[in-house]
Image (cartoon, rainbow, N blue to C red):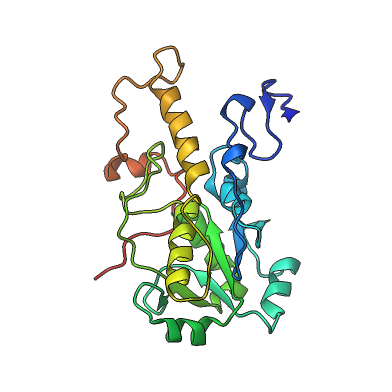
Length: 243
């Protein structure tokens, strides 16, 4: 535990939440063949308490966080890209991507190899686009994507559509697809529990009449799409792919 000088409540040094809402008991890191590199925008880094990038890293033993905007000359990123043993990919939607949702196991293994690196841009859509635009080394990477059919549980944040996923939900989806393709053999049933507990804590706070942020009209639903532009501080990684 540690104490934030600006906010004297006792805080957990691991999950960065207050002791009363600590989620560390629910953290159960997975061991994966795939290495997940979370490229976190500085704005997202400052939101460690509710940001899902930090939580995702806690749930994955074979992962790391690198903070920045332009990763073109980032020493660690280029070190990972230069490693010829591990193929590197960028998890990002687009026309020319390897869609994990529709590929057979043999295709997936041939394309990705045994121990791939998957880079993830952790930030709002505007921030993620800027990160990719500035990072010429990331632009050269082959991309992987998936067809999302689940609704986000991130109901305490506004988002363009309910099918847009947070970082941890996107990684959860990717892990399940890699399991189906025999690239991974990890058990993901508890992967989202810390995330779900965080949402429960936040929703309980908002619905508490004694809370300064009490929302009398809060109903646990996804925020409407037309409200998104009023609050761009929403972390989303994947949106529905065009048909």
